[in-house]
Amino acid sequence: MSRFHKIAVGDAELIALQDSWTGRRPGGFFVGVETDAWRPYREWLDDEGLLTHNFGCFLIRSEGQHLLVDTGLGQWPNPLDLQQPPSLLEAMQGAGVSPDDIDLVLFTHLHWDHTGWNTRGEENAPELTFPNARYVVQQKEYDFWTGPGDKPSNGPAFERVLAPIVAADRLELVSGEYTATTEVVAVPTPGHTPGHVSFAVVSAGRSAYILGDAANKPVQLTEPDWYPSFDMDPIESTKSRHMIFDRADQENALLAGGHFAFPSMGYPDHVDGRRSFRYVT
Image 1 (tube, helix red, strand yellow):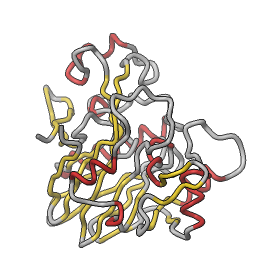
Image 2 (image 1 turned 30 degrees about the horizontal axis):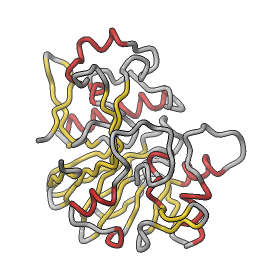
Image 3 (image 1 turned 90 degrees about the vertical axis):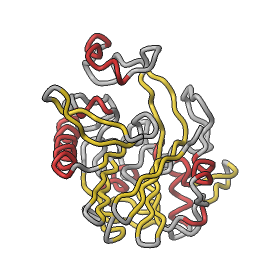
């Protein structure tokens, strides 16, 4: 089975890459939303009534550069009951890209399941997975996770996945609407974490939005006020979700969600007067 899916966005190319996936019971995934509330949305559940929870990243080919958005779970131990071992690098290979080809690694945020393949190798001596890349992080996000005070348990393992980047002088801290290429720009979507961003790909009259965790499931296009417990500021995350969905709807833009079931990409749609989601094929 293919672990990558390519689609053109004007002159740019967006490639969904699957690192791994698991199944989760829908009840309680969103705060206050139990199993019965999913009855109108059975289409988003599998044959066993589970949510497919993908762990995916996105590769952008833009203006002669290879940009990787988020780095997935990585080779490191994790507590998840995965359906397959994390294998982002194999998915990249299938798409015709090697780790050495990556020019920029762009982060939507720094949760551990979005930073895992920053490094690989031995636990006590991790090496950069993408040795020729600059790793671009929002200043606000970096300051939150590296600053004083208690932090949620789902943050990055600093010594393993961030310290080697700092030591190699490969970390670039930016703020707000960072321009990676003239076709790829960061869009602040705070709430899931303080410095969370999505990425807009705009080229030759077409557009796409790589959501990060501004949205976790396609059902949120219909129910944008549903939010998971790991949104740090639900009020802000809900505002961000409404904003990015409204923009995508107005532009008929492709939406790319790393936790959406693979192939992770599709378009806003309207069914019975309500906004919905239509996967690409």
